[in-house]
Length: 158
Image (cartoon, rainbow, N blue to C red; front, side, top):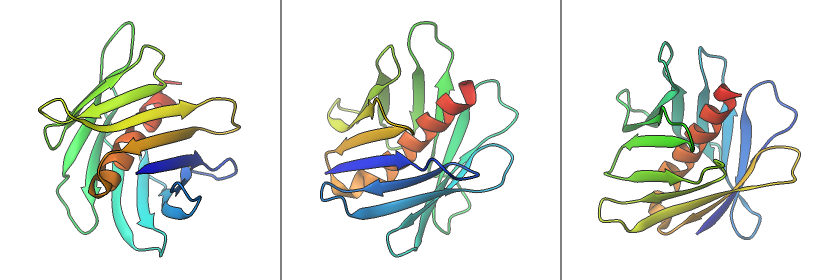
C-alpha cells in the first residue's frame, strides 16, 4: 500500500492530507493548539483514529502515539543524539527505524528484520511531501504516526 502525505501550505498549525495510490483521501491530520506538537488523525469520513503528542521538557524531541479513545500511549518515538544522521528509537511493536544521513529516507523493520515501511521525502515541493510504501494495510495508521513524529521532530530542530 502506498500513501502520499502532503503538508498543507496555508494553515496556522501543522496540517496534512494523506492520499492513496488513486489520489483518494484516506486520512487527514490537523494540528491543534498545545504545548509542543499535537497532531490529530481522522479518516476520510472524519472519524477520529489517533493522535501524536509531543512530550515537552525533554532534551531531544519525544512523541507519544495514542489510538482514539485511549488515555495510555501505544508507543513512543524518540529522537536520539547523533552526529552524522538522524537516529530515532521506536518503543512500539518491536519495530526499529533506520534513516539515511540526509534524513530524507527511512525504513521501519520489525523485530526479525522484515520491512514494515519505506519512507521517502519528495523534493521540489512547496511543502513537505512524503511517500510511504507500507507492506501491510493494517499497519498504515501506526506508520503514519511514525512519519508525523519524524516530520515534527525535524521541524522542531529547524
